[in-house]
Length: 452
Length: 93
Image (cartoon, rainbow over all chains, first blue to last red; front, side):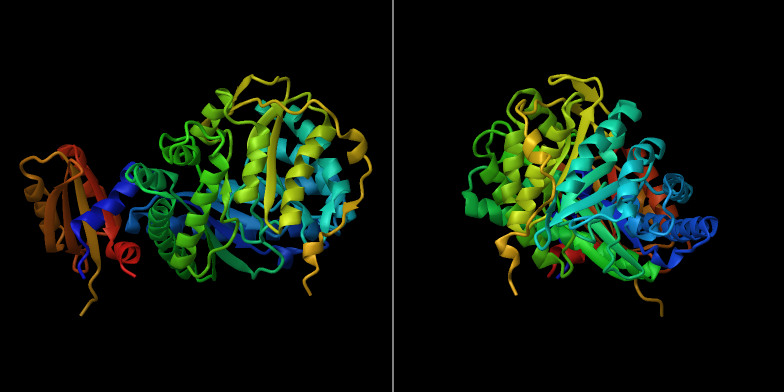
C-alpha cells in the first residue's frame, strides 16, 4: 500500500517540529587486545583503535543522516572499563596519561564523549579500581570528553558500601577542581549497570561484549508530548495506547538507522535504547510530557503514576518495534537538562525525595541535580546509597549523577551552559547518616537474588 | 537495470504559486524521475509530497539535498528529504 500524504507529513513533522532525533550512536570498542607491558606502546594502540573506529562512525553516521533526514545528534565511543586494562600499570600518572590519550583520540575523530573510564566494583575493589577512583578528580577536570562510571552494586552481589564511601570525597574534589563543578556531570555511579547502555555519562563496553558493537539511543519526548496533547479526553488505557503506537514508530526508525549504520561499518548491531531523553531545547522535555497528561507541574502528587504509565507504554511500543531493545530503556529525568524539570524545582514542585520515588516506576535515577557545595561527603554517599539500594533490592538499574556545586547554597541557580542547561541547587536533608555509613562493608545480596 | 532508489520529498508551509514548477524543474535538471505527487491541507499546513526515483541521477544525495533546501529557503517552506525505507518502517508492519 502506498504511503499517504498524512503519513509522510506525520514523519516530517516529528523531525521538523517535534525534535525527533537519534540522540546517540555509541560505538562499543573492546580495548583488551591493546594491553601491553610497554606503556607508550599500549597508549598508542588504544589511541589508534579508538581513533580509526570513531572516525568511521562519524563518517557513516553523516551519510545516513542525509539519507533518512533524521538528525544523529551525538556520536560517541564506549570502551572496556579502564581499570581492567590498567591492572599492570599502577601509577596515577599512567591513568591520567591514558585518559589524555583517549580524550585526544575522541577529539581528533570528532566525537562528543568517550565513556568507560570506570570500574565494576560491586563486590570488591582491586588496587587498580582504587587508583582509578583516586585519580578521577584530575581526569574529570583535565579532560573534555572522558566520562566515568562505577558500578558499585548488583542484585547478585549486593551493594559495596566501601566503594560508595569513596565517592562523596571524590566528587567534592572534582567539583572544586573543575569550572562550575562540571567535572561531576561526567561521572555516574550505578547499581546493575547495563553493559550496552549507549547514553553518557554511563556508557561502557561490557566485558561480555564482542570486539566492536554499535548501540543507539533514540529520543522523542517532543513527539510523545504532541500525541498526548492531541488526545486530551481519553482515559488512561487509551492514553497508553496512543503513546505506545507513537513510540513504536520512532523505535522502528531508530532500528532501521542503527542496523544500516552497523552494516555499513561491517560490525554487529547491538541494541536500541528506548529511553526518552530530554534536552533543554524547547519542546524536548520529559517533564512536559507528564504535564501534558494533566499534571500542573512534575513533582505534584500523581506524577509517579503518570511516569509509570508513560514508561510502561514506551517500553511496550519499543519492545514490539525492535528485537534488540536494551541498555537502560527507562527514563532518566535529568534536572538540569530538562526545561520542565528546572522549572518544577524552581517553583518548589519537585524535591529530591520525589525524584527518588520516581525510581520505583522506572526512572533510572537521580540525574544531573545540583546540591550545595558544603554538603558533607557522607551525606552525598548516603544519597547515592539510598538510590542504589532501590536498584539492588528491586533488580533494576539505578544510577546517580550529582553535582555538589562548589561555593553554592540551596536556592542558588547554576548556569552550566549549552546542552547541560542550568540547575537550581536543591536542598538536602540536614540530618546525618555518618555513623551508619561509616560501618562500611557490603550490603548482602537480597533474597530475590537466590533464584537458582 | 539499476534498482530504484526512491525518496520522499515533503514540502510544508504556506501555499503559493510556483512550488511544483520550481521543484520539478530542479528534479528534471538533476535527471530525477517523479513517480507520484500528492498534496493536501492538513493541520492548517499546505503539504505536498513527491515520490521520486534518483537511480539515474548523477548528482549525489548531498547535492540533491542541498539544492532542494535552497529552493525551500527561496519559497520560505520546509523541505524534507527521506529515503522511502524509513517511511515503510514507521508506517507499515
